[in-house]
Amino acid sequence: MPLVYITRRMHFSAAHRLHSDQLSEQENEQLYGMCNNPLGHGHNYELEVTVKGEPDPATGMVVDLTELKEIVQREIIDKVDHKHLNHDVDFMHGIVPTAENIVIAFWRQLKDKLPNGELHELTLYETPRNVAVYRGE
Ligand code: NI
Image (tube, rainbow, N blue to C red; front, top):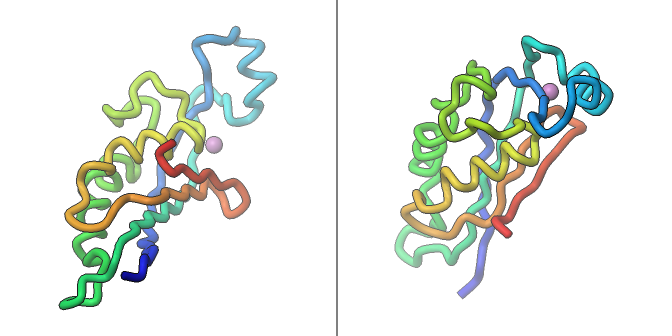
């Protein structure tokens, strides 16, 4: 049976501050620059969720994209949209919210929630130029 990768793109806006408790104030400022701004700053994020599987012979679908959209909305977007990632999101607590760490946290939120197909890849666009990809490894 042919294996197909199917992707749903979602959007959210959120604030964050890059600051590591393992570094001094000065090291944080030097490393993260403007992204260490004490009260944070915002991004318009794009999240691509890619699921792999064989299309169901009866429906022609790997996963129902409407159902996938609702799951991603409930498990991730509703919890992070218009929130401060350092303060408002329980599953991000204690994590420096770089694009890398965000995409790993999202994977853990989502991996066991899919009804069909297998979660293959998450791609998080922090800006159109800064992108993090995670495949659960
Ligand atoms: Ni930022």
